Image (cartoon, rainbow, N blue to C red; front, side):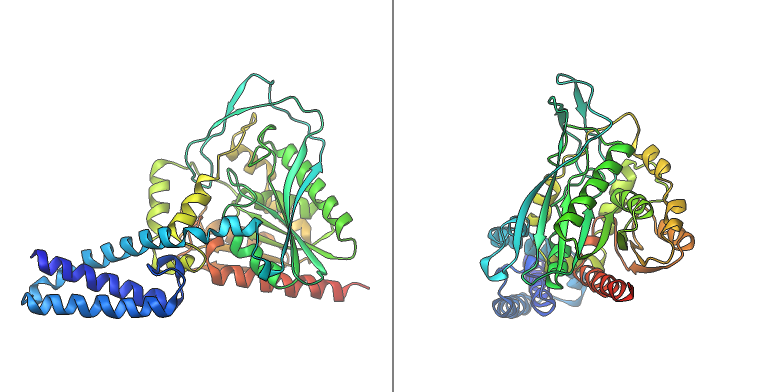
Length: 403
């Protein structure tokens, strides 16, 4: 039985290496981003497993061992991929690109006047577990600051850009975590990206997350983009709670020509432990394996660890989402184009939220993501490509339509 189990593990590992090589998923290759080597290793594992099974006279009754063997093969592939691919680290490469990419990355600090501050320089505010389902929050201590600066990162494409977008992250997220697929696809199409840490997030946790603070910050970021790119067409991308902010911004400022909303809630149900468990289980659906094209399990863990929660204000996340009243605000965009991207397997923010926004908008289209969860939609390579293509087309068509 032990030999039969070992044979099944080798076969399972061989199958996963073959799949990773064919689908080009470096995050699952034990050879690193070497497709040919991964393909050769898959043959070695498959032949070795089959030979071991034959030598041990394994019967058809032991074929059931292929199921645990396939699981162990997947875990082994993910672990080796995390170790071998650690040097690639797409999160680091995002802010320090390889010279061959010709992209430019600039840190940005935008002065912004915010109506709400944390209570004092000595009180500690605990950042709660948020919609993005990251680990428990960390203590936040507020320093004295009369005019805080909004931290951001500007990603410039290799060529001259005629379009720029403002990227607003979700609750508890930050401006860099898991953004590398989308930023690279946008830059490849000549679109500059300004990603910011909203109040209470990332490097801006010395102020609380409130509706009014996020509104002021979004307007300040848009003003900055307009000054930096005075002739460019501007768009906005909002992820989860960032989508609520992006709709408000677009409804109040016609400078936003096109809008993409990713997994944006109209109303949020309580996020309980079983919600987190179901969301985690849904991440193993077959369609989500495509995320290994962008990185390894180690890369995703590092991105998750970088999300520290958010500095809470007087209102809960549920109350802030309710106050944004996104279903009503989206109707104010009129004929401006809107793309709604939502996972059909999203447990935290069910797909019905996107359908509600689609019904309320005047000019919107929906991109349903099969097997997509709240955490995997933005990492799916084909979705990042479709978002970038949609924005490039609509921003430039809006420019042509202007007199």
